[in-house]
Length: 165
Ligand SMILES: CC(C)(COP(=O)(O)OP(=O)(O)OC[C@H]1O[C@@H](n2cnc3c(N)ncnc32)[C@H](O)[C@@H]1OP(=O)(O)O)[C@@H](O)C(=O)NCCC(=O)NCCS
View 1 (cartoon, rainbow, N blue to C red):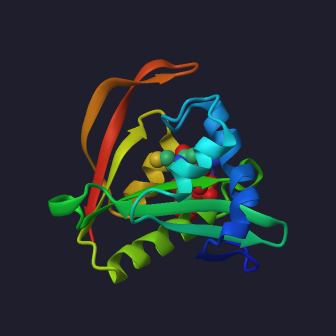
View 2: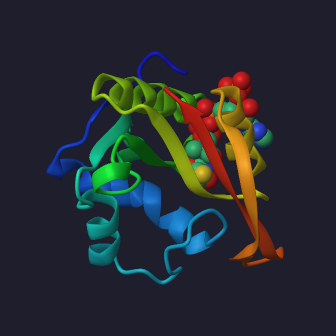
């Protein structure tokens, strides 16, 4: 990753930069289950206001280039397992931003006492993400068949991926 990229906790001032990163991914509809026509306010609530969520940004000289969040995967008796989500801006992929965000999320989740991390819905055609998570020790526990309606590939599977912390 280029040295001028910093990963830090997001503030409310970061939202416009976060939305510039999220919007292309949500509109493309290839990696997340948000409605492709989701409005900005709804996206903001979903990305920044989930109970217990910690929100991170990767920031370069041109502003926000990536964002991630982690939160309890389930409430109550399931709250020691974290869930996390990541998006890197379209012009910033393949430069280590995703890896840097993942390192920060894993470190943060560990420091907060989470015992494991689970991804509930990794689209099986999202090879870049699957390879990245596997490089961090996540394994595919199961694949829910035809659970994701991909805009060009049709019905594809969703991986449940997991690692302990
Ligand atoms: C998945 C995502 C977060 C990865 O972020 P990124 O900044 O592009 O990833 P990195 O540059 O840190 O690369 C991480 C790994 O991805 C893989 N990778 C990178 N570029 C790749 C490419 N063009 N094709 C395939 N794999 C690639 C490599 O394994 C790389 O590992 P390395 O660090 O050993 O080279 C990013 O592509 C993204 O935001 N995608 C859209 C949203 C999404 O899919 N989120 C995750 C949902 S589970």
